[in-house]
Amino acid sequence: MKVTIGGPLKLAFRPWVEGLENVPAEGAAILASNHLSFSDSFFLPAVLDRKVTFIAKAEYFTTPGVKGRMTAAFFKGVGQLPVDRSGARGAGEAAIKSGIDVLERGELFGIYPEGTRSPDGRLYRGKPGGLARVALATGAPVLPVAMIDTEKIQPPGKVMPKLMRPGIRIGKPLDFSRYQGMEHDRFVLRAVTDEVMYEIMKLSGQEYVDMYATAMKRQLSEAAKAEKEAEKAAKAALARAEKEQAEKEKAEKAQAEKEQQTEQQTEQRRSEP
Image 1: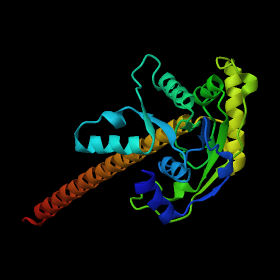
Image 2: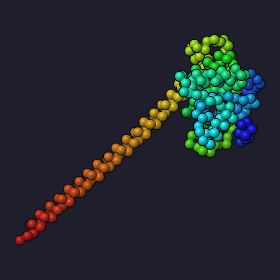
Image 3: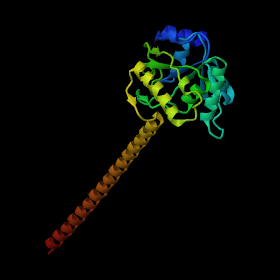
Image 4: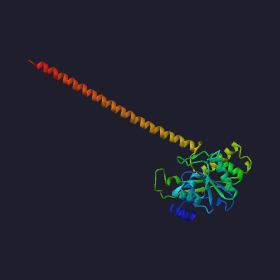
């Protein structure tokens, strides 16, 4: 995949990179990145010599048919690891276990602490479960990563990507060995996550929003739904008003015709001898 996708990707988009020297040549490390675009998982591995393993929902690997097999091959090729979300505690525990397994093999593990793509380009609060627990359980250093302008390459609704130079900044490794053995302390998990997000914010220059991106997406979805319902209600009210106006005009016309007919009959009677 580095040859078939990574090479052409670098040639076409020419991503610039800062901080490559911070990525260890060997040994375990966590790449904790902001998440602006689906393409983040392509550009980051493309600029590194080492393999980066991310996690993805298992459905990407189990869909039947030709398209499903192609999708599975693609995600395996770009270093995605299937996570079964049907367990008792869902994707969270499965993702943590998968991350620990990758790091115990001495490899690079990529994770998006926000948990989902940013809905508006801002940096959102990191979720403390995955990143912090994996870091504390393995002792692996955490490298904050900032993806720059990747959301502008293919904005929502656009089919063809825009040829432009995205950027990648990789910060110095963060050591959380002082919290070793405290991976079940929620205050420690919060502190570790917030420290990583602060470093990502400094690297990316993004505006920070102290709420989860998933919550913002729900708000935006609910607002869009409310706007759609309001628009629908307004159209219905307009249709009712137009119907009532038409009925009123029809009734007034009928009344006018009736009065005219009555007047004509009266005039006719008056003209009779």
